[in-house]
Length: 362
Image (tube, rainbow, N blue to C red; front, side):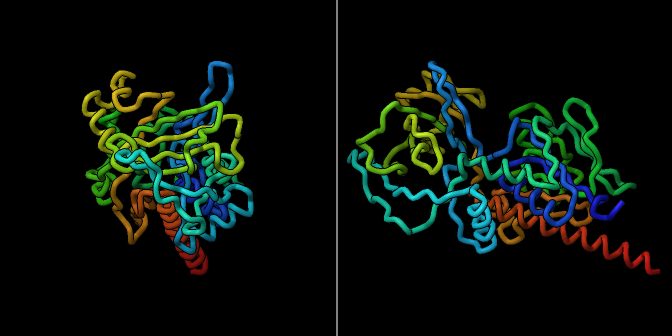
């Protein structure tokens, strides 16, 4: 068995950070198994499908509506995706709407900053990366327990159903709920990775602030001709923060005009304070949103815990935590963090191979 084959890494979570990490590791000859509890990849890049009463299927990018890039290493990767047809530039002007004056203002000029979207959906990038050669992706598999086998120096994974999922030299948690006790509040279960195994890493996640957000998805049979832009922010609103015309993005269906609205964190916090973590009633929601087709609740990270290191890394146990919460709370931050973890595991693998070769020469 080659040293590359023996150095197996488990990546937990198929959001853009985990997908980039898994793909990068596989390209460097490292065996990768990616586990995702959901039916498909995406994370903050997820796309949601809804069916109308007449059977029409509607697609919404209900997570990140787009992303911009400023770092050269991330831009290089995005240009590769653009060449592969996975991303395209969204060339619509953005603006703002003032609730006091009831007018649209400050239409953004083209060329100020490029806005990229996945095509035909935001999750297309993660789908492609999770299906690259060398990446074994297992969807619908939730992790129940993670153990460190001290004598073997391996990580052992068990599913929530008790099934043995294998042993791995390296472990990457791109979903912070794998180790954060915050998952207990929502599910009543302890996080799969015991905090005592990675004390220095997990302590940084304990008080990570998050901002709740409600996502509203709307579909119209005809274009909304009175709205002069295809994306805008809201000014002087306690309820709404942003709106995006999903159907105006490249390679989207134009059979209907689809909009995604984001609430303010303050409004979401107020609703959650009233109803807890359960789904709010239509009556509660309609106090602020008159026409509601569907909503989702999201938790958006509000701080960066490792802006310099770009990830949390324990070299002795070869375990890393990555995600936008490490660098910056956006798609570029998530990509950057995934690349950083892949580099550390690659270096660990190369160091191990070097030691093995030295031992063979003795």
